[in-house]
Length: 255
Ligand code: PGA
Image (tube, rainbow, N blue to C red; front, side):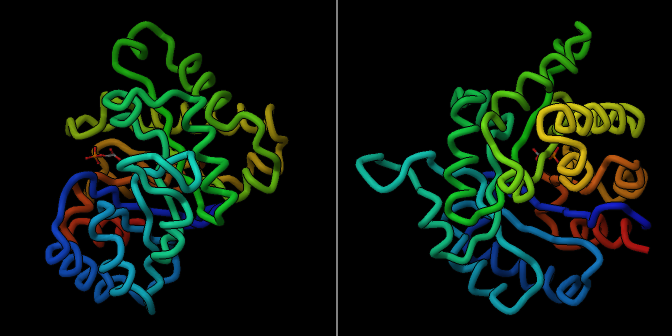
């Protein structure tokens, strides 16, 4: 696929996979995908499997990401994990502000913004998630919601920080539901996001930053979605739990 920006496909495993299952999965993935360089591939296991997965992928082109982190540095934050601890495990990416965290853990845009800055300061690449609910889409609020999330979650980031950031557009109504946004719906919002970034950070950053689509991405819809001019990759949940379907998604988007 001839794209302006290099595609990035990340697997968000959510709360799935023991260490044994996780290492078996990345072993197969590395066999299937380890030598391809067309697409940046990232796997995001749960915290408990990060060390083992990272060790398995030490010599691989597949990178490791976490699904969340604390906005705080070291200290009395029971149950939390900071960016330095992730770097210690050779983690390169971190998903921030996923809609499940926004909903179940009440993560605000301001919190996502603090986490994004903490991640970047530690040398991690944040994948910052935005997306509207079905009620918001039906009420014609998609652009207002996404615009607000972008403004709040990326507030105060300078050009250098933006260059290290990936955005994921994930319509909440398409996550885990089997309902994918149509290619037109996805392209429309991705183009809107790029326009917003152009307004806030200038055209050069807007043209370089990668915007992933997420929400029921599967091997049979990936190519069409990712062929849209402003869709630069995918954040994959369910279909990333199986090595075959995840590598099919990636292979289907390659030339
Ligand atoms: P899904 O999840 O692919 O299972 O819809 C996507 C996500 O939540 O990142």
